[in-house]
Length: 205
Image (cartoon, rainbow, N blue to C red):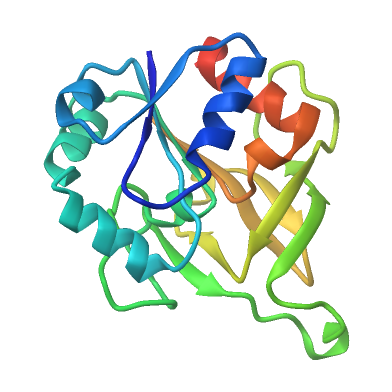
């Protein structure tokens, strides 16, 4: 079973409903035993980095999450803030991240000649896929997803970058290292493209 981790942040019901639309059972839980029994995990997230890490720390879930992800290699998919929390640190806050990826989170710094681009980046945008991966199975070229964010991941290991997206410059929008995967956009708000990605995560990983 796929478990969507409930730590107080994220569009939990929307994500569960999107899985349901593609015929996949997904449960929302903050129960360590249920999380430990999962076949796959989803780490959602909406809001600020420090708030996310504070909620995770206060939830008491970090030991079971680290054991599942780092020791048992259970697949995990981070969505938006959930992906950012996988990094080592963020310019948005002071609390260390999970450190599952060799990455930092940085604020958008658009070039002077593109100051018409508004922050947060809040729009549909396409992926420029750099690396084949099961997440992209049966997906059209340059799929479109819905983004809402002022900060983005900066991977320090180029081989972890699956796709980038253009917004003033190219930023890392889909990443993976082994069982750890993350996307900067919101699949649950991305219609058929989001449905395809979540179905791929459920069935092809």
